[in-house]
Amino acid sequence: MWLVPYNQGEDHTLKIELGRMTQIGSIKFYNYNKSSEDSLRGVKTVTIKVDGHFVTPPAGITLRKAPGFVLE
Image (cartoon, rainbow, N blue to C red; front, side, top):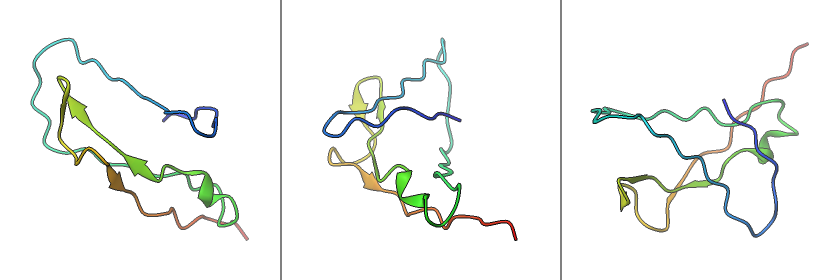
């Protein structure tokens, strides 16, 4: 899990180095989900590169908004 400061207009990058050749079958995103009022804080668009090559469209893919979870 990662939480980074948001700076409007800047790219926010997470780089993962596995250290060796590794086959990956899927990547799953669990978007920010503190509450329904705060769920807009999550990631909206993601681009993924492997060894410098896009595996998503260069403009990225849009992640759906997390639904939020409120304990009652």
